[in-house]
Length: 149
Image (cartoon, rainbow, N blue to C red):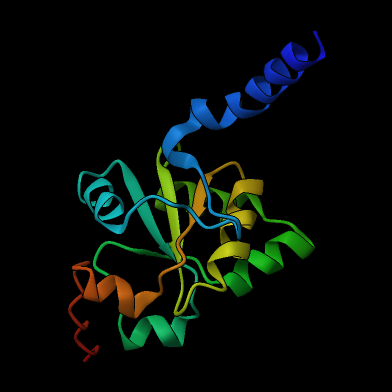
């Protein structure tokens, strides 16, 4: 009887992970969705790629179609709150219902970035891989913008 109860308990404990399937994360909290699937989802507009690096890093190079939401801004919103205008701008950049994959230069800022976005109601998943690895994996690099005249 006790063994049967243990099996039921273990099965129930695993149920949420079975239901979410591809949303699993590794032991450190990063998504385990393969990069080729992330890229396909982003290209199909089923997911959004969010770059949580800072503006200077973004200006040196970023992925085409990515949205810049610096970790410093997310941290400020967590400390001080987000204004209605900022919330509306974020909703325009990150429409609801899409999976949001967060990346940074090397992966460490993606975790707190995704956590902050989850607190704002987004289905955010941090990528372990950084910008350079994403470019190597075939994510298209954005063309440099022309300087203003």
